[in-house]
Image 1 (tube, helix red, strand yellow):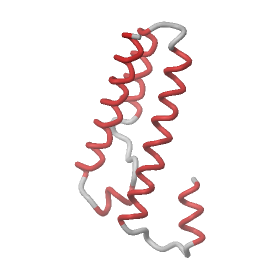
Image 2 (tube, rainbow, N blue to C red):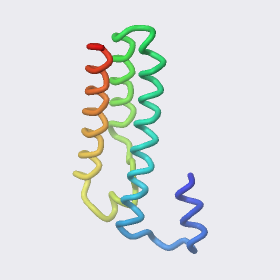
Image 3 (tube, rainbow, N blue to C red):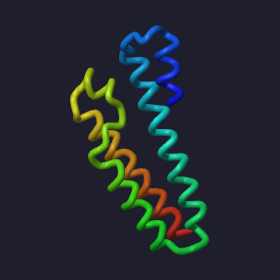
Length: 100
């Protein structure tokens, strides 16, 4: 949403790869912040509920186009890499939460 307003203020130009990469970073950080908040809430419930949250996040982001500009400029492998990075970090957070 914030990035779309920035594009409109720039005159609607198509962003280059630097702008697209910052767009990827904004979306990735917002998803990770949401995941951390979910973990902090579920930390007091159980590790099983946290596992459900991880698999729910993986399901929600599986076939979604995280960044349409990056996908149009690059290949789909970049989106796949981001998806696996999000899921891997989620599982690492889950392991840390279970063992602590």
